[in-house]
Length: 417
Image (cartoon, rainbow, N blue to C red; front, side, top):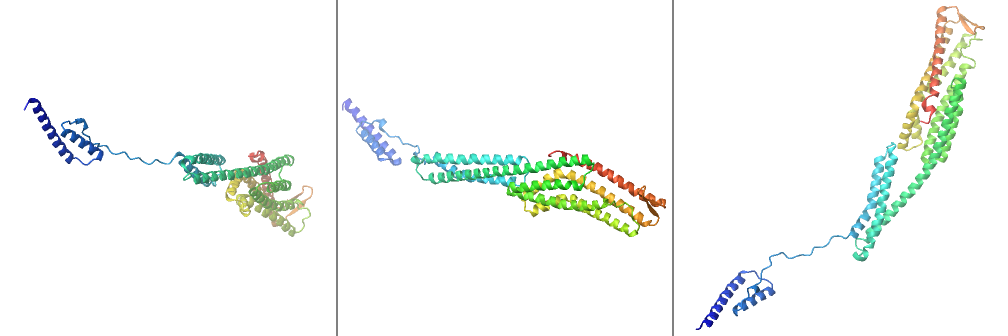
């Protein structure tokens, strides 16, 4: 065997050994695709033919196969979803703000309501815009999940904007009506204050008779407010008028009894020649004190009396509380002064009864002096008691004048506070 032949034999044997080793490796290796198996057998066949190409031996791909994941909702689907829910959320927001502000009466309340309405308008407009954008995507993504949601959101947004616009117009008209009514009441109140102060400066006293025309002027202004204002303003005006009418009735009774004290003067003893006449005078004073007591009791409980009228006319509870708060802020000090004035009348009436009691207890021990226009007592102690009561009347009358001066110059009566 020559050298060339020996080399061929050794190469063939090496090829067989490699082929046997490759078969064993394939038997131990997991099955692969036919393409790979075919490639491997091609390599084995090449090795068997003595032409093994190591680069033809396949390698196993250990990487995980790629799986295509489904894509999420498109922008247009999301826009349709937001469009459908935004009007409902805006309506719930407005309802929550309204419930939270219910019963609040601060100056910030209108601003809070206005801010809430502005936010709601922006949300409704955003819903409409998003709905239109979502509808534009139907050509690419189809109608499912877009059409119905977008149409619902757009319709709800337009409907809510229409309702808010209608409410705004109605509220504006109502506000204009109420402003006109309030202006008329304010003007009447200002005129009453000026006339009251003018009468006091002229007569140096406030009389019930002079107050009657002023009360009538206020009642006429309230009638105008009830006619020109909103339904709620009409209820409030009618309740306020009923309150003034009750007050005016008590003032009329007081004025009538006070007039009887002076015409003729109850302490004028001219022509009193029977003891029974003193009892008649006493009855006049008692009637005056009773009327004054009722007048004072009404003013003392003015807050309750006003509330009763507001409730009787079915004024809304929130308006009742707001009205009473304003009433207290302007009427508390004024009513306090009126009560003090009524107390001076009570002192005057009580002193008059004391003087009549002295005259009655000393019947026959005094006689009327027409020149001095006073009774002359024979008993010094009776005269002293009589004069003490008379001094009490003068003291109470002086205090009453001082209180009336303070009343007409109070800030509540001199300004529109």
